Structure formats: structure tokens, C-alpha cells
Amino acid sequence: SNFNKPLLAPKTDEVDNLAQQEQDILYRRLRLFTHLRQDLERVRNLCYMVTRREKMKQSVCRLQEQIFHHQTKMIEENLHRGYSVEKTKGKLNDSKERGKNRSKGNLEKKGLSSSISLDGELLQNW
Image (cartoon, rainbow, N blue to C red):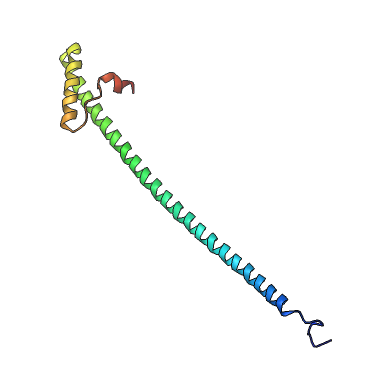
């Protein structure tokens, strides 16, 4: 028992080699964790951007849906008014043409396009 000293003293080259290998291993692990942290940060940022994009898309879709419902409601009201007035007059054949012209005129006044043919069958069947 040599007071906890090794029986054979290791060569200094071997000791330096082992210390260098341990440092290399630690440095590789440090680089690995650094890259992993950077990749995780990129993933987090990407998830944030996708979430933000999807929220914007959802709000745009809701607005488009509301606009569509308001437009169809206005069209139905105009068609209802046009047909109910003309039916009371008893001119059923001529009323379709006047109803089309009236609804187109009303749509153009309100800024809506009249490029779609609007007769009662389209909305009644819908």
C-alpha cells in the first residue's frame, strides 16, 4: 500500500491522451446540445407562425361566410319583395322579367354584381 498511489505511474502521454479524449467527448456533447437547442427553437418559431397563419385564415373564412350570408339574405329579400308585389297585381308572366330587372337594379345600387342570373328558382330550390 503506497498511500493510494498507483503501483506503476502512467506515462504522461497516455494521461494527456485520455484527458484530450474526454475533452473532445465533452465538446461534441456540447455541440450536440447546442444544435438540438437551435433546432427546437426553429421548430417553436415555425409552430408559432403556422398557428398565427391558421388563425388569420380562420378569421378571413368567417368574414367571407358572413358576407356571403348577408348577400344571400339581401338577394332573397329583394326577390321576395319583387315577387309578392307582382303576384298581387295578377301579372304572373310579366312579373318574372320585372322582378329580374328590379333585383338587378337593386343589386347594382347596393354595389353587388348582377352577372349571375337571379331568378326565383335558383334561391327557392337552394
